[in-house]
Image 1 (cartoon, helix red, strand yellow):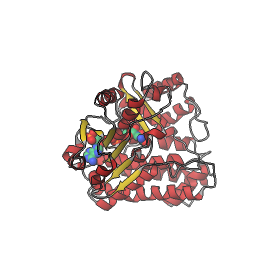
Image 2: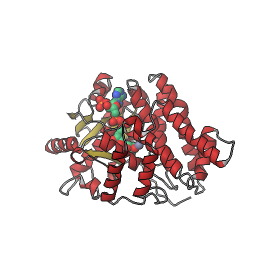
Image 3: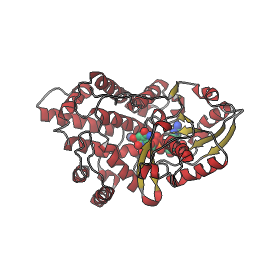
Image 4: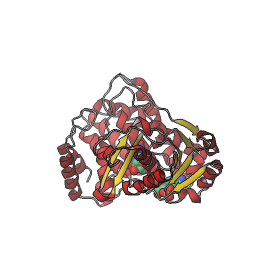
Length: 385
Ligand code: NZQ
Ligand code: ZN
């Protein structure tokens, strides 16, 4: 097992009725900005529950944070929050609202010229205004990690940043908030979380059986519960299990002491930046090709995954590898997610564009062995057509 340092300070309130807990978590004299998206929280009663819990606090709202949150929108929030002397922000929504809020709170404390440099130039994040979250869409894991992915519309870039300052102070995970999710978002959440686990698990063995089995537990749970959620998004137990699985998939626990890949995410972000394809769908397109392209060096973990998660244990190694890849693709498709670039009307032009961008950005050494170069990215994307 590799050395590691583990730190995760996020306090979790899980279960029915837990939104009321936020009243005690936010200082009584705080000036609170509540951030949210396009209005789903107003239709499903989450907004009312949040406002009831914040009674007695000074509250300001910032809405219309869009999916794949835009730097341009978030900078408006930063401006308002600074002028209004906001000292606590509460994000209510999915990964986009939470990520957007991480950017807002870090940008409010940023002392350099342009907070975008935290992403484009990796400028250090030296502080942030405290914030909490109420999660309404399980999938990204943003509620219990310190990372965020932000889109800059003017340049069509989608970049990430993170820092110990951008952990939420608390997150409320009430499965009842997910009952109004469209099936498309349920599918996205399950496939995103499943891929998060695979990016931290399908690398090479370092004799970390506990991390492996924890990763496999999350995969098995998502495999069992995901299809049930498509039958009914209002089944409390199913949504509860998906919600906690998605949080566990990316809160740092399964990553400790093991190598991680993340090349699928890195490539996928370009497809969202250029074509607006939902994040999870870009992963479902890139991951199978990446695993096939790298199957030789990922062989040991792929075979283990095939056997323990999909029950693939017969045939030659090559046959088992292929059966494992097919089982993964079938799972994504059973979650109603297409797995080919052509399904999204994306062709070779886009691949050329991504290659050019990566060359300009000097992208190199992706993957757990730092052996995925731009030419490999091109091959992987061509295999996804
Ligand atoms: O905006 P509203 O009206 O709230 O509607 C949203 C949005 O249209 C809707 N929705 C959310 N909760 C709902 C609901 N509709 C009905 N009922 C509810 N309870 O769902 C739509 C999509 O929301 P969004 O937040 O965009 O989805 P998701 O949670 O999948 O987040 C995607 C973003 O997270 C980033 C992605 O790149 C993408 O930008 N990621 C963040 C990560 C992180 N911080 O760790 C890791 C991930 O790999 C990912 O990159
Ligand atoms: Zn993801």
